View 1 (cartoon, rainbow, N blue to C red):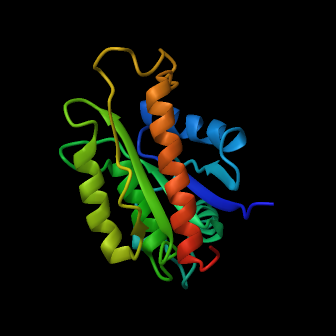
View 2 (view 1 turned 120 degrees about the vertical axis):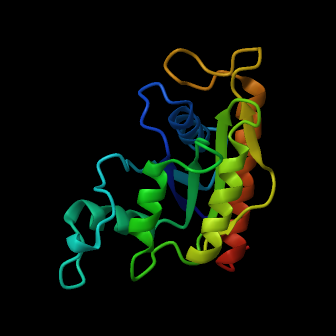
Length: 191
């Protein structure tokens, strides 16, 4: 029986038919069928209040923030689906990162990977900024494979609901998940 790692998956997009949320849904499907030893939970971050330290009272956080922090703490690794806005990560994703980095930092020491879909660079510049943020909060990103999906080049990559329909992209996503699993186990000394 394979060791099962728990992955917390966060989408940096609010759009109903978000390609990034679609990438996470596909990752969950892959984890239930083609990939053994990985369990992915889609963590909702849209309801988190904007970071405001006035909301921290006597070392405690608002209940919704604490529940989010606990999900990150309980995960073995993180899957970020990160749109690129102005060469960076979205405010939604950065807000979640900031809440979970408040003392004690619940990101520290976890393995992580990034996937994105977009225009000319497939959201790739958000990867580089997220990796830079990860240095400070002590995340350990996989280096390969990278996943930048050119969403608007034929053939179609997503349907109208934001679901990934491109088989080649699904295979690349599978490779990212396998790499994340292996790296997580290596960091934990379990392989």
